[in-house]
Structure formats: C-alpha cells, structure tokens
Image 1 (tube, rainbow over the protein chains, first blue to last red):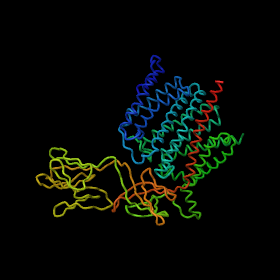
Image 2: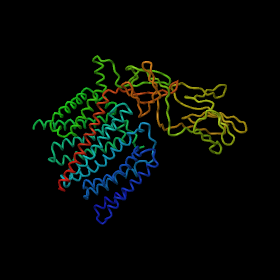
Image 3: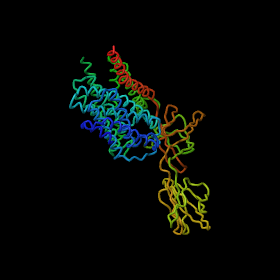
Image 4: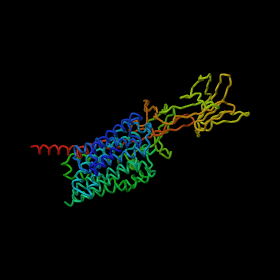
Length: 247
Length: 342
C-alpha cells in the first residue's frame, strides 16, 4: 500500500525517481501477502471481503503490466492511476476488513466458486482502469482516452459476461434457479447492462458525444462499486450473497 | 436509414429501462423482486425483448459479423429458455388444459419415509411426482468437533476435554471414569422425591443435553446434566464444572435417497452443490429439520424445462462475447501490424 502510494506520488514529484521501482515493490508485496494468506486460508482466498480486496491487489500488478505492455498505457495519468488503485484496493484490506480466514460453507464448495469470483476480479480491475481513463478524459485528450477506455471495457466485458454466466449456472445447480432476483444479482446484471448500453450507444453515435461515452464508463464503474461494496456491506440489501459480508 | 435509427434507439431505451428496473428491484428484496419481474407487465417486457432480438436478426449487418450474431442469438436462447421454464409459463400451460406440472416446490422427507408429494413454500400441496423418494439417511458433517470439558471447581484445572461424546464409559486421567447415561433432544429435569430426574421434553422444542456420571477414584459417584445452550446442573457438593459445545461450522449436508419407480429403485446422494437430476426434475439439498423420528431433509424440486435452451444460449453468448471483443480486435491488430511491416 505504501509502495503504491509512493509510486502514485512519484508522478507529481519528479524527485521521486524511483516510482517504477516502488510500483514493482508494491506488486511483489501484494502477491507475497496474497500467497501468505492463501497458505493459512481454508481454500482459495476469495470468500471474505478481506480476501476479495487482497486478491484484487494481487491481480492489479499483472493486469496493469498487461495494460502498459499491450495498450501503451505509459502516460502519467495511467501510472498515477495504477498507484492510486493499488492504494485504494489495499487500504480496506489492511485497515477495514478483518483478516481471519473462515471455512467455506457448503453453498460455496463448488468448482464454480473460483472461476465465478475470479473472472469478476479480472473484470473489475480492468473496468477500474477504464474508469480512470474516462475520468481523465473529462479534462484532457477525451478522444484518445475514450479510445483507450473503450479497449479496456472491451477487454473486461467478456470476463464480466463469463462471471454472470458462471454464476447463473452455479445458481441452477445449488439453488435450482438460473436467477433468484437477489440484490447482488440485480446489481451485477445492472452493471453488465450499463456496459452493454455503452457499446450500443457507441456503435450508434461513435465519437460524436465523446463526453457521454466517458460518462457511461464512469457510471458503469459506479455500478461495479455498488455491486462489490454497497450490496455486501449495507444492511439495505439482504440476500443470498451475504457470504462476503463485513463479519 | 430511419429504420436503422429506430432500432438503435429502441435498443438503447430497452437496455436503459432494464437497468432502471434492476436498480429499483434491488431495494425490494429477492422474493418481492421475483414476483415483480414475473408480473404481467414485466412478462410483456420480456416478450418485447424476445421480439426485439428476433427482429435484430433481420438486420443484414448482424449477419456480416458472426460473433455479434452469436451474441444476439445467445441472448435470444436465454430469454426463450427462461420464459419457457418460468413459473408464469407453467401457470398458463396448467390453465390451458395440459396436465398439472410442477415448476418448483419442496419435498419434506423424514428418515426412512417415502413420499412423492410436493409442497409450496407456504406448506400447501401443489402436486405429486410420478415416482417416490425415500430418505435413507440425512447426515451433517462439521469442520469443528464437539467438545465436552470437565474442570476442577476449586482449582479451575482442566480435567479432560473430549472431542466426541463417548458411547460407553471412558477412563480419564487421575483415575476418573466418565459415563454418558443419556442423550436427549430436549433435556428437561423433573423433581421426583426431591431428586432431579432427566426426561425428554416436547419434540417441537430443541434443547439438547446429556446426563453424565463421574466416578472418582475414592468411589464417589457424581451426576451432571449438561446442555448445549444452557450450561450445566449438578448438586452443590459435586467437585466439577462441566461444559459442552456442539460443533458450529457445517461442512456439508447430505441426503441419501432411494428413488422408486415402476418397481425399480436406485440409490442417490444429494448434497449442497451436488443435486440429483431425475425424471425431468432437479432435486436440491435445500434445508433440514428435526422431528420426533430424527432428522428430516427438505429437498427443493425444480423442473428442468427450458434447461437446454438456456445453457445453449449461455454458450453462444460466451463464444460471441469472446470472439467479438477479443478475437476480432486481435486479428485486426495482427493484420494492421503486418500491413505496417510490409
């Protein structure tokens, strides 16, 4: 977390020349922490909110590297975003959520558990990157940033679809219904639909309303945050997906 | 051109309204949300989607992009399968002369009991299966073990910790001998001639407990009554404190059932995440309870109608999404790269 914060700060303070080194140290530390937790956990660490955020922190490094290498995201905004995301993801894991591992309840003992949650984690990291590009595009280089955000959302969308499909098949096996209209299911479907709406809108309008395109990506990410945080932590939404709640 | 604009606009409006409906329904709770999405007006909304997707296939542009076609076809299959297997569709078919079919219900089975009667969530019988199910045994396994502990009342020293309730007498350290005289689902103590006598209370209340006898090396016999939830009871002269904690973390629930149809029978195991698929239905380990005979298992029964369509739809959707968003851009990028290098 500290390494990621320093790497983000390095964008503004050129004196901190080691920002790439800080970023690499952040990635290695997150992967090491995740592996260490996995060794003491009851299964693959994706059950509690602590484990979810730790896994997100672990995935951030490799996925950010992928974005740098294959999408040319080496500008200061992207580098700042990587550090900031690392800090924001690992902060709750370090200071908010309890870390003690819990044994898997019978409902989560399924071969679908890891692929279902894992694909969502991939999608969420990529969509977070897209949202940062979209937010940056509101201030400078909107066309370039929109193009980049579009490529990121395109990369994330099949993961999001796979997560939804695997969840639905798992629900059919475990609960008998493809779909239970549970708050978490509805928010994740809403999230998928917002990005689908973005694709339809973009296919129709192209770059004519580039700011509207960017706003849709930001709204999509707000849906991601609601699905991941609000639905799990708020008492407003009680449903079948309360395994990952605060306790 | 105008037609093209109409379809684009319609797709955006339909998707937008679906997003709004999702957000609205998330505040209703899953049961109310399910009724809401299965209500008349919303059924119309789903049919509009089906027709819209069907018409989208008439767009020649869709046919030039095979993965986009798969995406739309997949969604159509999911909608069609979902509607075909929905409770509303069962209602209509049952209403218009078809034989009564069960969309979803519950089987309540006591151990060694056979039934084919299916109930709804309110406990009303909604139909019968064309075969019988007999619950041979219901088992719960736990991550943690039970723990029976004895402490010295004066020194607080732990005299023994047993990780299972012994069937017969056990010799403990220091020459102590422990014997479980009785196990009760609802342990109640009644006074007879000034002495507490253990008895089984009414079956509808669960308050498990044990009667223990402790034999000291000096030949003194002490009797203890220990509950899972209510501590223990013993004469003041007894020298020990006893505690019992039941296992708390279930690992798995399992029903061993025999299916009997036309004189043939077959044995199956139903666990959480390991349902039984038989005779067009899926049987799910839903819940459990206890009655005077022992455990009873509550199995969810769901019709498999529409299953192949939905599964095909999901496969098409995934192939379409991966092809359209990953494969096609990758091929385009490679071609562009080659073009530049040429």
